[in-house]
Image (cartoon, rainbow, N blue to C red; front, side):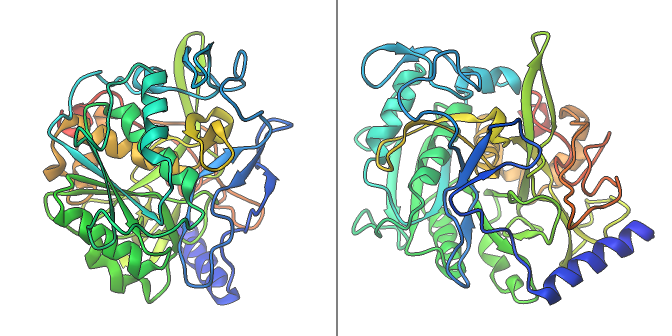
Length: 412
C-alpha cells in the first residue's frame, strides 16, 4: 500500500507542478553512463502540445563509416565508401543472436513506421544499411519499401520535421529483426497528437500488420480521447515507453491496446548475452488508464508501463545509417530503438492477431528472458527499490516481462 500510494502521489505532484520530461537539448551526459559518454535527443523539446520522438544519438563517437574496434559492438561489413569497415553499434547479426531470432520469416508481414515529417534520403540510406549487413534489398521499386503521407498518398510528402535520424533508426531496426518484412513509412503532417494518430489509422487502412510508434507525451486527463486510433483489431501496435526513467507514463504507450516497449542495457559477459534495466527506460503507473484484466502487478491500480523491452541504452547502442543529417554511420539508442525492433520480432513470428493488446505476452511470460538488475529511478522520483523502477525477477516497470528469447513468446 505504501508504494501504491507513493506512486500515485508522485504522479499527481508532477502533474500539478506542470513538470515534463527534461529537454535534453544538445549534448548531455547520460545518467549512470560510463565517463565520457554523451548523447543528444534527436527531437529536443517539442513545440507546445506536440509529441516527441525518443531517438538518442551518441555524440562522443566520431560520425562516419566506421569506428575501429567500436566503442559499442558492431558487425564487420562493407562501409558506404567501399572499404571493409566496422560500424560502431550492434548490427543485425548481434541483435538476432542476442534475442535468439531466426534469419528467416515475416515475408507476409508489413511493419508500419509512424513518424512526423519525412527525410529525403531514406530509401538510399536503408539500402546502405542493408547492404552493409548482408540483408536483402528493400526498395520502393520492388514494393518492399513504401513511403506515404498522412492521407496515404505517395505525394506530396510533408517536409522535414527534424525527425530524420528517428525515421532512419526505425526502418533499420525493423530490418535488423525481420529482413523479409515489408516496410510502410507513414509521414504525419506534424508532431501534433492528432496528426500522428491519423497516421496510425492510415497505416492500418493500408494493410499494416504491425505498427511501431517511437514517440510520446506525458499522459493527462485529456489524452484518452485519442486511444481509439491505437486500437485496430488484428494489428499489433507497439509504442516506446520513453527515455526519462520512472515518471508519469507516456502515451500512446499507456493505452491498454498498445504493447508498451521499455529499454535495457545489452552486453556480453564471457560470451553470453546479458541485460539489465536501462536507467533511461520509461516506466510508470497510469492515473488515467484502468488496469487491464491481464495485468496483475500489485502496486499500481492503473495500467503499468512497460510490457516488454529490448536494447535502448545508447551506451550499448545500435548502428544506424543516415546521410541527410550530417551523420553517416552513428550509434543510436532510446526506446525508439527497442520499439521498432520488437515490432519486427512480432512480424517475424507472424501472428499479429495475437497482439490486439499485450495479454499474449503476459500469458507466455515464461518464454521471455527475464531481465534482472538496474534501475530507472532518479533523485526527483524514486520508488524505493520497488519493481516499478527496479529490474527485479518477474515483472518490473522498466523492462516489463523481459526481452525476447526466440519466438515462442510471440506465437512463433
